[in-house]
Image (cartoon, rainbow, N blue to C red):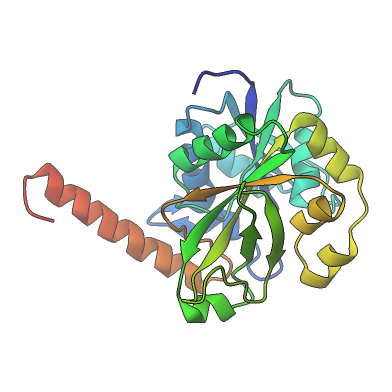
Length: 255
């Protein structure tokens, strides 16, 4: 990608999440979860800067301790998007990436693909990620958000209900990080919650219902978001297997 835009990555890190308070600080193999996300973002070639936006001093101090840049934000902001906009308003940028602090396995190259997707589609106001899946249990799980899109990869709808894309049961799972054009982010935060957003409890439907075009970038690997405490062990198991595989490769053993 020829760099044509100044891109700012912001990680909103709220302390009191409903299902798992302070999950951002949860240690994963000895390192706080937020650090994994920050390190992945720092490794992304498309991001000119990465900032954590938090509402709690414990998270602020944690980020400072591992060398990250962090900004305190008001605790009464209604959403992660508003937290991102609060920080972005004082920072020069053409594109703003809203990263999720509970996606410790998100690859830096996926961030780059997300940004490239928005840059390469000037008719879209924002972009997001999806991955092809086919597990019936996951399709039925309301915590797994599904997305359907048109032939140009413009989002048509997001839902917690099953949204299949083929008769064989395949579907696209949404990975909830977003790249916004600067103007689109601030316009989005000025909009009132829409009826579809309230029904599905999905903030991105506000953008769709108000006519914003969302570009869907399909990646080739799923992530493991940490929504509840039980998800931490899933992430740790994945990292242990990955580290073991890398160790075998580095010693010339067969993986």
